[in-house]
Image 1 (spheres, one colour):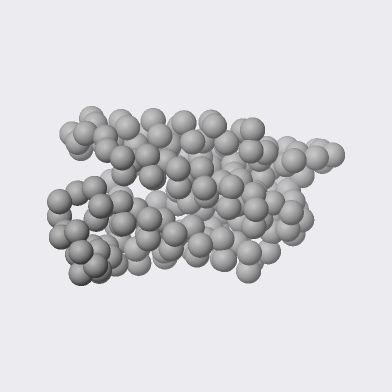
Image 2 (cartoon, one colour):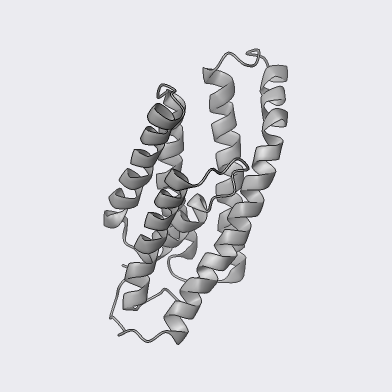
Amino acid sequence: MNRLATVNSILLPYILILAVAVLRLTVSHPYNFVPVFACLLLFGACRPSREFAMPLLALIGVDIFLTTHRYGYALTGGHAVTWIWYLGAMFLGAAMLGNTISPRRVLGSSLIASISFFVVSNFTVWAEWGMYPKTIGGLGACYIAALPFFRNSFVSETIFSVLIFSLAYVSENYMPAPRMRSTCS
């Protein structure tokens, strides 16, 4: 599938980001089964980088609200790492999926997003929090303790990436919408 080029490709990424934001605010997701990176990958694949601020700010706002109001924690440097990774996922979507969207590329970008977020976010937990000794063994223990969350996130992102990009494909090819010359440039 080539780059999406209809009105549907303009609206769908925004609708999905809004849906993820609302989902995170309204539904408890104890097993990390939320399609955040899948939606960000699609957004990056469909929308130009000048539009990345809106989904980034929406998800940052949700994170701030959940952290400070729902969970009662203070914001830390680890949150900034997460927010940078949101932006990174959109750039990954643009780089890997921007010109040609294929099942292999979708799965590959989903895998890269999940693994890289796991590595970086858990390194941040190890470095920032006092839960683990500041040794190689402590870092290993941190990664091992996070494996159940990684499994759930990986499965979630893979399933949702396939579903969301399939939805985009169906929207592009089977739902009537006027064609644009270059929607995602």
